[in-house]
Picture 1 (cartoon, helix red, strand yellow):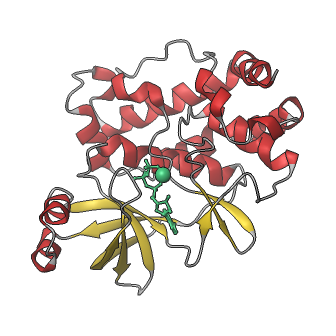
Picture 2: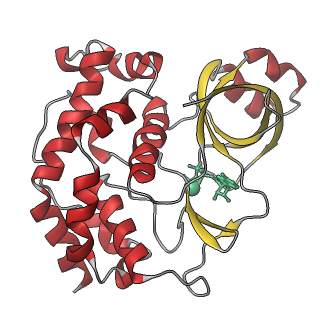
Length: 261
Ligand SMILES: Nc1ncnc2c1ncn2[C@@H]1O[C@H](COP(=O)(O)OP(=O)(O)OP(=O)(O)O)[C@@H](O)[C@H]1O
Ligand SMILES: [Mg+2]
């Protein structure tokens, strides 16, 4: 995973609950920056890295994700005090998504996708417990006539109160009932084996390796759990969770299939 240096705060994306912003980096690329100092906290950024990595491994389209180094001094040239505070609270590493210029929000009434895509996306969002792919807030962009996934900050619902142990990995994900593409996900049983086979232990370990130590340390601060105490153990806890959830996928997959009926 690349690391870029943020050189300029361009403009806020105020429709986003976490106040992401378009920034320009030292490679002259434009990125949507997800700030570690936003109210959602560092676990939202971990969701972007971990679930973005899983989506990419599964062949789902999403913009490049980078780590983005930010200096608090960028706040000096910002007139808005709310943005100044956000920049100061996010000094250090953050997460950036390649900015897709001219993209528009996916609209299920006009944008067509295949049943295969819908099924693979619902399978993925059920695996990672993503509450943010509803008709009201699809977190998909249409760009170059294709849907692109964004915003995996509200995934991994379990990790907001987590001690690192694996409890009930087979648990169906009830909010999948509100998934924007659930009605079209007619091939969940058919895509299942191929999707699961992609997510091997080495693949999951490589994805967790992209999460910086400083994110893991911050997330472990309020936990006081030996399983999360050091970054390597913390990464292993996530890998173990996903391996257990994949192993037990019959039940959560059936939950999604039942939600269609
Ligand atoms: N890579 C991108 N390219 C272009 N526009 C983007 C990109 N990422 C996000 N956006 C725009 O910014 C908005 C907010 O981004 P995002 O959904 O990631 O933020 P959030 O704060 O997590 O939002 P939410 O309110 O859904 O929790 C998106 O709805 C989209 O319009
Ligand atoms: Mg969003």
